[in-house]
Image (tube, rainbow, N blue to C red; front, side):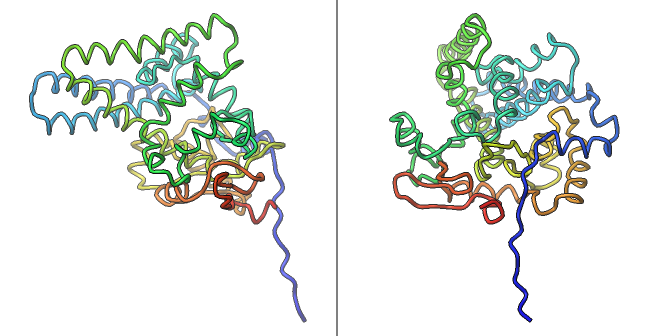
Length: 349
C-alpha cells in the first residue's frame, strides 16, 4: 500500500489568538514592571562615563580603541534597555519612560517619541506588512518604481555589493535619520515632528562637533567607533529578527513573521534577552525574564510554526539571501532575478 505524504499546512493566527491562550498559563509577575532593571541603565552609564574619563586622561591609542569598543557595547545594551523602557516594562509614568527612554536612545539622536511612533505603533502593529512596516524592505515592485530603493538595495546584505558588508555597522543610524526626515505621517503632529528634527540635528551635529574641536582623536574613539559597535549590536538582532521571515500582509502572525535567535546563555542575559523576539512580539509588555517560559509554552502548542536558530547561522543567512519580496514567501534579487525561500516557505505556499 502506498501512503501519500501530505504537506503540512500552517494556518495563520493573530497575536490576540496566541495571547488569549498563553496569557492564562503565565504568572501575573510576568506582566508586572521590573523597576530593578533600571540598574542596567546606571551600570552602563557608569561604564561609558568611565571610558570617557580614561580616554580624556590618556594618550594610549590601544587603550583608546579598547575603551571605544566597551563604550559601544554599553551604548548598544542601553538601546536594548530603552526598547524595554519605552514598551513600559521597567519604569512607571510617561515622564519617566520618556526621560530614561530618551537617554538610552540619545546616541542615535532619537527622543523616545520617535521609537514609540516607529517601533511601538508601526512595526508591532504591521510587522512584515509591505509598505506599512518600516523595518521591511517590501515587494520587488517598490524597487522597480523607486530610484531611491534602487540605490539603497546596493547597501543591503545579500545584494553582494562590497558596500553591503558594512551594513550592520551603520544602518540603524541611517534608518533613524530616514524615519525622522523621510517618513511622512509617522508623527501625530507637525509640532512633534519639528521637535524630533531639532533634537536629532542638535545631538548628531553638536556632540560630534564638540569632540572634534577638543581633539580629532576623540571624534573617532568616543563617537565613530562606539556608534559603529552600537549599530552592529542593534542590527545584528533586527536583521535576524525579521529579514528571513515571510511577509504577513493579511494576518500579523508573530510565529511566522519573527525569529528568535540563540547564542551563549550568558551573552543572552548580558544583552537583556533581546534575542527572544517571537516572544516579544507576542507580548511586548512581557518581562524578558519570562521569555524562556513563553518559548516553552509555544513549543508545546505550535512546535512546527515556532522559528529559532543560532544567531551566527541567522546572520550568515541574511548575507546569503536577497531583501526584496517576489511573493510573501520568496525573496528576490531584483538585479539578477535570483530567488530564495523565506523561513517556513514550504508550509505556507
